[in-house]
Length: 277
Ligand code: ADP
Ligand code: MG
Image (cartoon, rainbow, N blue to C red):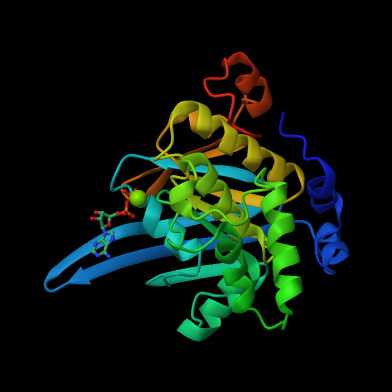
């Protein structure tokens, strides 16, 4: 069902942007946290949101980060995503120590190595799907022509099943389609890791499974995925579950009965024949 056709097939099977051999040959950890703490201070109040987390994630993993509200998931994701720095401890991303980098260097790492997907899609309104996807390319170091930007954005949109919707604005797209645009935007710079915080939080159950299908496909292509969810049935699409409680890792295990999105979708009767996968 998720088999990309035409242009899309080329995107999926094309070696990823020049550095593909580099990536394919590199194995081992892409993320290594060692004894990471994060303490928030507001006035006199101190909150230890993360209290000594050590975590290794290998290239090509698909990890669901779980835990009750307030357990520290978003704080940990912000650190993993180089949006925030740990109060103490070490973070190696792709073998580089990013624990103590300044804001500019962190922004640079984010642009080159990471892609982000959020619960609320975070697309620019009144801006086409294509332009939303082009945006991260404008922050890159490479100078692409207008035609090259367009070609790249359209190819990535096609790869997530949105060929023909390039000119649609977010308000003209369903929630699932908006999340696909956001995923395309996350992919356009060929990230090492895609980080997703509750990516299905605003979606109905069928659309959620479709989005898990896209993540599973990306993961098959070798992209590392780290996804926050509090839904057990969504976490079952990942390969590994890491459960947090009170700022610590409570449990960390491989998913034994992993769900396959294509299989699950086939069991669900299509509610809307307009849904294009
Ligand atoms: P989760 O994503 O699992 O719900 P969070 O990482 O958002 O958990 O929060 C962990 C703890 O840190 C909570 O007690 C929360 O109130 C606190 N916290 C999160 N962000 C901040 C912040 N910016 N300032 C102060 N406290 C925060
Ligand atoms: Mg959170």
